[in-house]
Amino acid sequence: MSVMFRAMYRLGFTPWDSGVAPPELKALVEGPEARQPGKALDLGCGTGTNAIYMAQHGWQVTAIDFVPRAITLAKAKAAAAKATPRLIVGDVTRLDAMNIGDGFGLLFDLGCLHAIPDERRAAYAAGVARAATTGADYLLFGFYRRLNAFMNPVITPEQVDVLFTKDWELVRAWGGDQPRPEFPGRWYHLKRK
Ligand SMILES: C[S@@+](CC[C@H](N)C(=O)[O-])C[C@H]1O[C@@H](n2cnc3c(N)ncnc32)[C@H](O)[C@@H]1O
Image 1 (tube, rainbow, N blue to C red):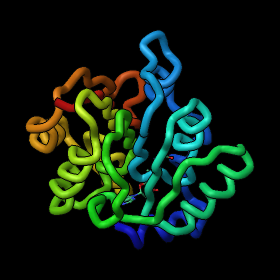
Image 2 (image 1 turned 90 degrees about the vertical axis):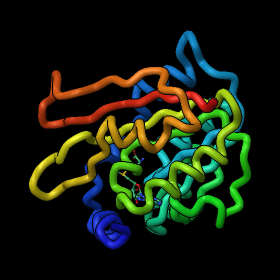
Image 3 (image 1 turned 180 degrees about the vertical axis):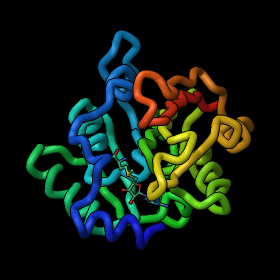
């Protein structure tokens, strides 16, 4: 999988890279129920759009991606934005090996977990649970069915349940085929027990 993502960044084919933070994240950062800034963890941060956004809003951000080129681009974007997230090249299924610390109050994954091979997902979930503080918010987005013949990252609601039910409470899940059937994505907001 890392080979595929490396190739996509090398080719500049990164259709997910919108350059703007999604409203689902903005609601937790700026909305009426905005959380008090603390430590945030961006899992599979790509070129850093959301890490920079959170850092600009007072969060102490650690952001991780396993593609060096993505992190290089993120560092350049952060410098241009005068934001200072901690940007790390690493595998989010091996958080313990990275010594990122714990006590994270906001965890964010937009399109990373659904691309992680099934056999590495439990390690991801264990690392994320260890990194989070009690009461932490975890916002996760994934495709719940294949996007098309070429793109096949998927995580079903049942898989989310199995991975996270021990350590997290599901606050809300939303999304679906409407109004964009070509975009079968689902958001999950979980809270650390
Ligand atoms: C669909 S992109 C989304 C990037 C970013 N979250 C965004 O919304 O712009 C998924 C990202 O996850 C990264 N990724 C996938 N598996 C990973 C892993 N095991 N460890 C670290 N990064 C990973 C990819 O390199 C890619 O940048």
